[in-house]
Length: 407
Figure 1 (cartoon, rainbow, N blue to C red):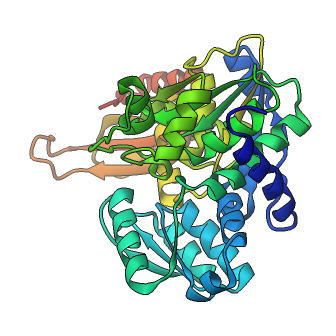
Figure 2: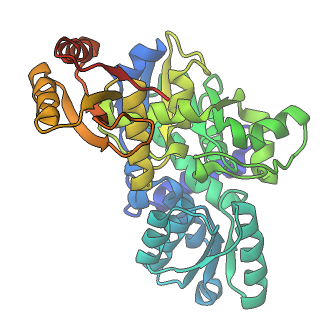
């Protein structure tokens, strides 16, 4: 055993304690992401875990270690969403009262889900760290036990059971990439794996605009990042914990970062190719493989998909943007004669070309448009570029000039 023998023992205990409380999520081989990255890529599907993320593991194990008196006093936690649901679910299973402090701008779906598990939700502050401070202060006033989302040995041990499951199913794994917010998940996995197979490379992955662990490791001390501007709300943490920073410093090969559009493109591909719903924070490890931030060419690699609690309105925006980026949805504009039958002629040509209309708008009131004409804007779903060009040519041949509008 190495430096973290005590913590590794806790991880082994957590595996037994959590039987029947959490799922042993499957390790799914992905031919799509293997092809894109050049590696042999497997997905650890914690997005399909109870409550929709890995957080139930650490929360449930930490509460299992409380005394009867502590259970009676209840628990309080701070979370951007997933830890909240994990604590609420585990507390309900154990008959413990739970209070969750969440940032004001937390996704509505996560707030409602947390309440649905029976917790009292308090909204406070604009970021996780604000909620964390308020939760600590409330714990001191009420006597409730504060459950830290990452800087706690029992929480880390619960998350580490993921590492045991990866080795059970893929003992020949060479690279594991893990999303990093405060660092509890990557710390637990690193200890679980490195204590058994020291040669496995463990990488943390952060959003580039919320890279507190990377900055801290580069500076050699825990460093606070004040500005958090990322869609990856589940890992938007201003600074890592003391425990997690130490483990990351000793056990991780590196911490890499991914950009916002890289994350959402991976999210879209998971939806379309793998039929998996994964939240932005849960995608960052796989995004690092897909976009070459971690070289897995010729290696057996696992990306942990840490959560699937995505806001539906946000997901719809991602899908719309990606369809436009890929040219599968396009906006075209043109001018038609403003008289009976003109619109029908346009619709007839579009239908004949094999292109589908998603949305159509007509403007005849703009003062810059001639009185006998109207401007037409169409959002189209196109099977390929050839179909779009065919439609534009057919319209032009009938005296109707349309162009693709990209701005």
